[in-house]
Amino acid sequence: MEYFWPLTMCAALLLGIFSGYPVALVLAGIGVLFAFAADVPMIFLSTGVSRTFSGILSNWLLIAVPLFVFMGLILEKSGIAQRLLRSLAGLLGTLPGGYAFAVAIIGIVMAASTGIIGASVVLMGVLALPVMLENRYDPRLATGVIAATGTLGILIPPSIMLVVLGDTLRISVGDLFAGAMIPGLLLGVLYVAYLVLLAIFRPQVMPPSGRRERIGFAAAAFGLARDLLAPLVLILLVLGSIIAGIATPTEAAALGAAGAFLLALATRQLDWRQFTAVLQETTKTTAMIMFVMIGATIFSVIFRKLGGDTMIADVLGAEEAGTNAYWVLFVIMAFIFVLGMFLDWVEITFIVIPIVAPIIAGLDFGLPKEQVLLWFAILFAVNLQTSFLTPPFGYALFYIRGIAPPEIGTRVIYRGIMPFVVIQLLALLLTVFFPELALWLPGTLFGK
Image (tube, rainbow, N blue to C red; front, side, top):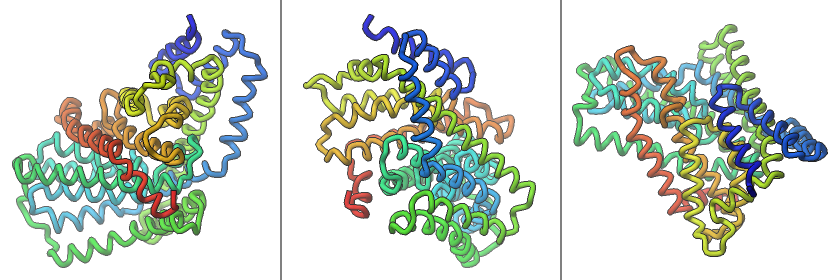
């Protein structure tokens, strides 16, 4: 059988992942075991070690990962979301869907200033879910809008995923940040548009507040402008310095981390216990990402040596002259969507991207060659947005389940996120058929 070893590696990988064993060790272990089983020369396996040191551990770009994680976790402690919710409630709380609109707006702002999914979903759930349920919101809508908007941080820059994706594809992180901006904001706008339609045609699922907030409209508007100032300054500090060419992504991440730390100190929301907890969580998240990268490097080296990349190309028909490029792209996107139901974005990125990126780069989409991988990277990022919401293992679902009242069951949460998954797929289709959504801003800013 021509592809016996690659197929067996894929089967072993699935068994290893569903066994519950750490994915990083599963990836590296399978790579080493199959190197011995298939009689791969050990000198070839050593290339995985050299790539680990030269491509991962000594890569200055990846320093941005712990810095962005630290920035997001520190901002969670600064009280920005609490103050924004209070201000927006004063403006929108008496309108149908007012609290849902407030959650969507805060989700977009927090995504552009933190990028930490778990922190955003849990924070918004703790702050907004009790208020929404108290005001007789449909639990499906309440949990769905919190989970969906809380995951925007994985797409809207600054995003850890885009930093890792840029390193994996050897694409400028600045280009990725610029390319993801419009699709990310488009997704947020589609969420808001869906809420507007519900407010018009089904106001009973998100009724207006029965009482007015104690603060007046003018005071609420002034408070909103004041509370938006800090995250806007931070966004300009990080993204503006990259786009203007003043700082590299790593340097901008350092500026953002320092700015978030000073902001938390200024608001007196940070004590020593919280600070040490932030450092521990930053270390754990960074270590997890790095170990998966190392394991995936070992796995992909052996998988390619045994003909895995050729097998994937044959399955997709990418080598055949008459194969439609968009059909190959559709199959890859569908495969990634299904993987997102079971795996985390880190694992999908390091397992799938090294295999499918060369295939995509060799196809003709009617775009300049240098733009194809950038466009594909944004499509990949939009697609992975769904992995946080799709059952059975969507992380945002578990976050919401952990903070929701006992009477809100898992089935209610699953039903609540379905409309938002459809909206995410709509945003993906729009980016497929209108590549300029991802390519216009990098082309305008950087001439790409």
